[in-house]
Length: 165
Length: 338
Image (cartoon, rainbow over all chains, first blue to last red; front, side):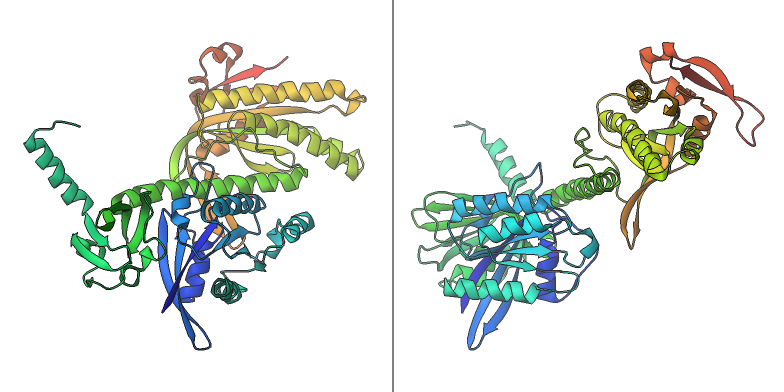
């Protein structure tokens, strides 16, 4: 069976763990538990006859004191850049992380998830930010670990990209 | 090379085995398992099979093997429920070695600290966001970078509470059009808030024309009481500067300030609208009472504050305050800034 490693990277409290829990266990908790180090999970997905075992590395969030170690990314076939749509600066963190990840492991498929899309009134991703994103020509998916919006789509899209890569 | 006596080496070996629960495996360069040993059961792994691919047996190794010459260190990897390991990978003549050392305790300790730091960092950002919205300004928290120091579940803590109120603003608001009233209010409030942030305080509440600041919640150097009094002096100075710059001095406003120190209950209240920070207790109410008694450009402080402000004590004169429901007047201190 094919196994592929996917990493979740982003600023702290952007919802990386919640996205994995929503995708793997279909659960969501409103309580924020910080991740120290890495939590690893797996999920088997099927594309027609083809089975793919996704190994999900939920890596601790980046903050001003703690940078993400690029050694965690080694061997990744793809990654998610997770952004908290209600905190604009987490988009800047994602931009910086993407560059560092690419420097470390080269060009592999990735998707930027604008998480917490359910917090419509608190969104800080304005037109300027969206324009900046569209210039980069990245795959961007609006998601919500809370409601499940975009979660299956994001993991499915990245899985396909990895298989095609 | 350290020339350690055998008993010392043995002791260190035993200590490592006891506390770090080492478990190792040797993978061939084709990724198949060659050999293994140590305390794999601690990590919930009991069924390793020789010649089977390592990454199929231990999925956290997917993509990591074979190694090039450079060793890899992966700290704090969750191996199974509540069990964390530092994973070390390095090459040898026979293949690639994978070594697990228990990091569960370290993860727990780091987790507690990081949780606290992250929660409170989020709170501060939220506070800044509220202020941004209030003043339509980009980043009023520049000068208060330190993290909060507060237990998430709430705690009783000695802090200093400052209340500042714009004197005569009600009358001003009745004699001026609403747009002028709010423009003036914003100008004065922003002027009051900045010294709180500069002195490592937290803006806890803005209630109409009054501001409540907390000192000793955010980490800082120096005493909370000194920071609070310094903030109060800066506020009065800044307000005087505004009044000097105002072309029409008839609209000049002033502030009165009350400061009290002592234990209060600090906590984070969760509601459907999100988390909010709250300080509750006698000393919060006392600070309000002192502010009510203060006249324009006057700072009134309680004994607890006075006792901790060192050489600033010389500015203050003793006076008394009669608290509601108590017979004995309380000693307080006043400084009327000229």
